Length: 489
Image (cartoon, rainbow, N blue to C red):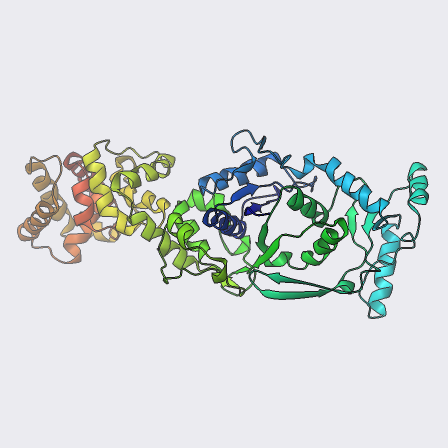
């Protein structure tokens, strides 16, 4: 295997988790850095939980992140794309059966007819005796002919791998953790094929990685114990094992494995909240890897140039949501105004906002608001005051509206806005006009600012008026003032 070939192999049983996205990213970067191939394989042997909807979601999330693969399922049709398919494990059962038959014929595997009840009894007895709860099958010494006769008679059996004679240590160099040693007696005779013929993870994973010519396998730390069983299968088949690297866990603030109950961890949900794919990749890249120059903000192209597996860290990394939002804000604010406007459109459309189509107004509004945005969804509340249909006088305005000076302040405000003769006020014109209201009515401090704010955004607290007023048509400002005056009566 002179060429680098790596894979990301999700199970389509749910959403793409940020941990899975990070595994995909590290494999993608390693392939790109080394002129290799990145493959997307689908591990869908869990028939009960695997769905086409989940597969579509995982593929769409990978496309959104722009982690594009050379071989695997086609991103549009989900059909095979590449010379070494099928790339869905559910379509490779004949391949797994063929390898199982070879192991059976060589006496390295056997059919086991233990019932669930018999297995459970063995486990309970082993636990009571303080032994590892490993299976001791009476069928391990049966000949293949005996087993086939029992199957022909209607018996139901799994195919197990024989470990009894493998009395040695399995040692390999993990690309993240260094030397790892597993004694063979850590595991008993493990299942390769279930009684219905469906392969288990460790079996089909080895076959697929070998036949798809994987040179390296980077995967999550939780797969480390699987490596022993897989090395046994590689050895039994006379195949060369790929190089393994087991990536650290992503932890929550309590240093527990990151889970959905602590907040958004699905890439689709991050997309819906308005995180940028560039920021997602930037942030998750640093959960287990560090930039050689200590940079925190960088692009995927920059990552590709400097990615080195020697900088992968074996210890768990904490998912800091505050820092993640800050990083997204940095990526967002670096974009041109026109691009930000385009990106926030789906969020504004979701709220049915009617805003000016003038590019000059749009550019001006982004200049005002982008420093307040951390995620794209923040645009909703920032732009809501600019939408005439959203204007409503809030209950917390009642106190300000009851002040004796408020009516005079609002009348003065309305008259001066009308008299301006402008479609929009500039920030300077607004501040000058506000001073004129102050001089005309004698109101100052909160008795000046709060009533005007209610007349502009419907509540006494909130956005800076010098930012908001220049983005609202003077005709709308007059209409809003009239609604507030009508409420006062």
